[in-house]
Length: 148
Image (cartoon, rainbow, N blue to C red; front, side, top):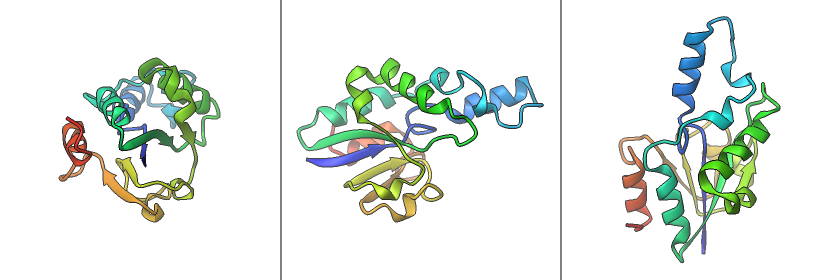
């Protein structure tokens, strides 16, 4: 089976909307993501939860969540873990990997909204840039994996 890593922030959960809303509500907070509860309360991106499960249920792919930590929030490790269990289920908890350098992991695919900055540019497999022209949404990603 081919290993597929899926990023969290702005790939399966809406980090930017929560960040912008928190900044608007309290402009004095320079790093809204450093606030307690920020990560566990992120809203899933449309179609993301179903798509991750669908790809993982295929007999061709082994899906893991690969996310970088917010270095300004040591509680993000717990928050991201809580989010995964809440939205993807307990089985995905053991599929959660938190690393500041995504190039350290071996795999066939990395679905991520960024193409560089956290090791994505050195990932050995194929980088699928979520939100790009080629992969604007989860339907396009599912098409890439032949999972309909």
